[in-house]
Length: 586
Ligand code: HEM
Image (cartoon, rainbow, N blue to C red; front, side, top):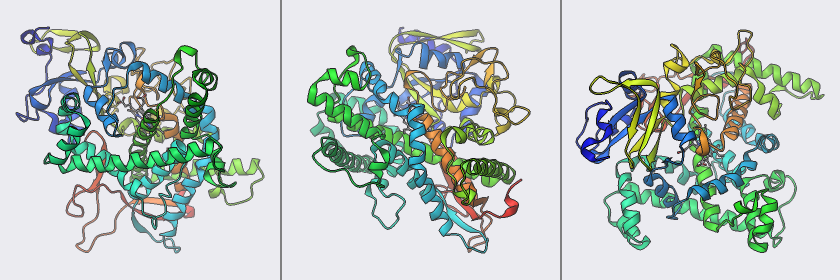
């Protein structure tokens, strides 16, 4: 398409807010209202002004998203910026091809299978128990309240979850007496990446044109402390995963004894991702590809050896992808339960009844609060499921994702839009090289699909009139839908892997860890609310101000405390906690 005839010219959108940053500042900074207003005004495809005068398309239309992530996913791939940025942040600069991605993904699929989740759940229950014990130990035994910022504890817990499952390694993140360089590094990763939002478009240029030596020199000289901060973070992450990997290899090659029974490695029984991949790695390097074919149950044309770098890159990606997201999601749920005592009481009652029932049928006479629910029971609790689903719909931890269009393309729209000249457009032509922003946030709030109450947090939408889960035909993917299925209208639905929401994306790049995330969130929430009551803070500080939590949406979600009680910047979730009392049930 010639530049002066760009088809994007037809598509309506807001004027520039700033000559350099276009609309980006408003889109990525405290941006819930701005994002929703864009869609309300312009529809499911909006032209926005990006950095350095470029133009991008902001997409939330369900049919268009189906084409992007499923039907024509080979055309709409990660942006150069993304492909290069992520491996760069693991200290390796290389491109992952579609084929490599497919192979690695196929290798990882069994690790995240339902069967593995069932086995993993009891192994990781001690993390939730420890988190609960730590919080309880800070509460007065007389039942009075204590204000605690729960966020650091949730993030320590989430790190343990993902590291134990991914690396089969504990960083003792819940032990505050241990220095935890790794926890600090990984906590700083997402904020560092966000701080570099405005320089990210330059990264492909630098990577293509400068060697590693010069890239490092540029990092040293550039007046950007955030860049050097990111490099430090990455170095710690990289060194740590290399160390864990080396230890695993020694044990798996039989050159060292595994530690005794009861310890994490023995409990995990090699079910963590690193062990599974390490086994494949060792076998493939010792015997060649034929054995990996058998082990990974792949067809021979898929067989490939993993290099050290690929394996370590995978580990770092999984930990990065699974840490911040679940921390935020659990923080959101606790904040909602604190704001809605009625919901909290109903949920606690459901959990108590399930634990009572399970304990009775297994001859367990201990306190019901200590019972760990098995996978199928936990995942089948209808109200818990509705609370988790509705929270993930309304507040997706990742709100915007980018893709680049690799060839001239046409995107059909489910709901036509009006062009700048007033024509009705039921499809939009997109020139090769255009960047698309997929708005998971706007998709999950689309009134066309979710109904007039789309902006309300209403767990009941996931329940039948008698309080059972609405039929989603399979647990996580909708195969047969009716217009009564939430998020479905006239047979159309968003192409998400998790019901019809876009929170975990859909298609070949969908979140591979969504079942793990769901299980972790449910396990942590049920364990905590069995023993602890959560409320919004009402305790005034020395100046008489009460902390009001406000969630900023800036690509991720950041809970802050508004002035005058807070600084509007520091991520925190201060809540009033006390031990559960008999009246805290329905
Ligand atoms: C509530 C929690 C989570 C949310 C909302 C979430 C969301 C997402 C989204 C939206 C993507 C697509 C990113 C893109 O294409 O640009 C993604 C990818 C991914 N997620 Fe998650 N995620 C969560 C938890 C987890 C967990 C716990 C793990 C691992 C234990 C995980 C592992 C991954 C991996 C490895 C990818 C890359 C998949 C690929 O490219 O094939 N995620 N996640």
